[in-house]
Length: 254
Image 1 (cartoon, one colour):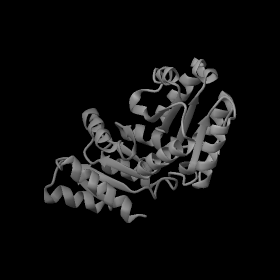
Image 2 (spheres, rainbow, N blue to C red; image 1 turned 90 degrees about the vertical axis):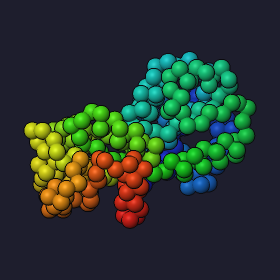
Image 3 (tube, rainbow, N blue to C red; image 1 turned 180 degrees about the vertical axis):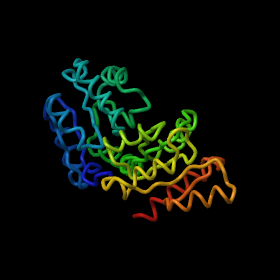
Image 4 (tube, one colour; image 1 turned 45 degrees about the horizontal axis):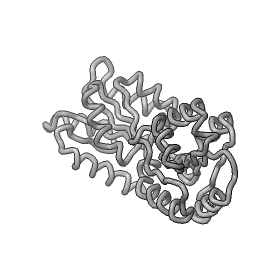
């Protein structure tokens, strides 16, 4: 499940201390955030899992370190961290060769006002906190459906995809999500069997599962509800309706 501590940690990548950096740190800490400065790539590897936000202060020592930037960009994409970049126009251009524009939330050209920058970053974090804190695993044998659902949800939530029950169990072993969206009709191992596997494991039995089904007839709905899921969604529903129901589900569980 999501860690409350993680969402309050900011990983600051910088080559050296400065008055501006100290001011940024003080502003984050004043709002209740812990600032982690790993200093080296090895420390970054060890610390990244404890952070949901990355701020890169792009000085020459960092901009010229292609190995470090490749690692940071890959790590950010894998863990869906929010990333913010500070640097000169040239440094920002270099950074964006590693961090794709869709992964960079905000960028700031130096010289900066530390208070204005930290305020802008904190406001953006707060607007995206649901995506930072809620993780949804979607299980469906259709690659098209998986991509469609991910597209609907990824602006608000962190989404992991699995196209079979076996892949879903591997995903659960790596990280326990806050919600599972499970296709009811799948070949080989169907949704009811996957749910049985999940509920039979003490580590996973408390994960809420919402069924996805393409059928709305009474018989199918009765079969679905007999398995006592946290709910069910019809694949024929409008995307906005599905998103709204998932939002409501999390709102009720606060």
